[in-house]
Image 1 (cartoon, one colour):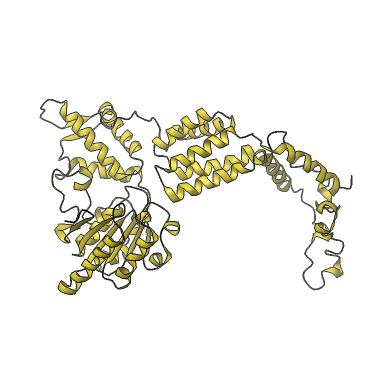
Image 2 (cartoon, rainbow, N blue to C red):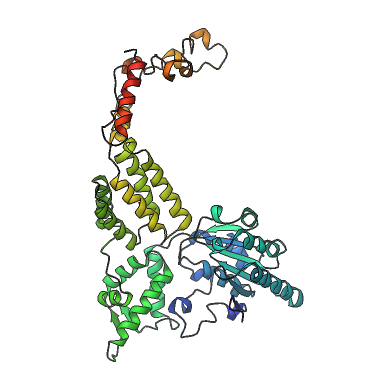
Length: 451
């Protein structure tokens, strides 16, 4: 067998069907049917494209996008097994254009000689260069293969347009704690799994779910390690062996992260994270960031909080803070975890050491408070829309001064309604770059009001 490819026959020759008892637990427990797939209910409804592909045996290329451990490889294996296609896996890390073409040529010959179709599975397809992705197109266009390409990165950034347009994009969602718990329960009892020889203490299950972070493969890997560790230190017993929290921690060499994403700890840690950045303590902020990441917190949630903080607590004291936060969020979306933690850490440090100002949030809240109290007033006539026929007859826009024609690019005229002429919403601080903004804003206000 070529080292670059994993080839298995369909049916009993799927990845899961070939799993030997010495294979990793995650491989042995790989679902055999769509009904056994954890989570992804939105993809499994009757009549869904995935159902039609598997149960209707319809040729269709798929692009699977989702976090690690959510079932991308499993779906490819199920398609192969239930449609009696040959399963061929190409390594996106080690295969080049030559190997991709060889795999497709072999599938074409197999189809011509025996009529048997091929599932070509490419994991982490975003690692392929444009030339390598181009090499997949003939096989997809001529249906010599049913391509199933998987990626953890946003395919609109990492996959070429011709391949996107020729494939059905399916988005896999992160598994919930309940989804992963069901996978663990099945593995504990199944003969192909741990065969009822082990049970988990309640706190151990909760910690295992936290450490898995929605990744079923990681959960099974940790479970297998813990089972092996506790079995090696336990004398023969007549009943199942209990895996306690200490055994789990020791097996995976990782301290327990006391963190409940749905309880008080979630809100406490997030609150401490935000307040540490606001207080300019980068060390404390990194500590709470690490706790969230290690507990499996959604990195998109963390990125959203950073974007909010950039405007709420920094604002124009450092105008680049929002750009930094947005860039981190985009990077996390494109890269995924665990590498995305570097982008989150960089943004966290940058925002923590940046000068602080809450002038932006105070300004919008003050303006909103006036609006809610009914302090609105009419738009001054010279600012009203004057682009329709008859507008000037009623005085709309008649005395409007075009700012670019005025000295300094600022026209002395009224912008606020009469009822709010003396109001002040934005009050810059003297911190960071907002100090210069404060001076400029004061000069602008004097020019606007003719002072």
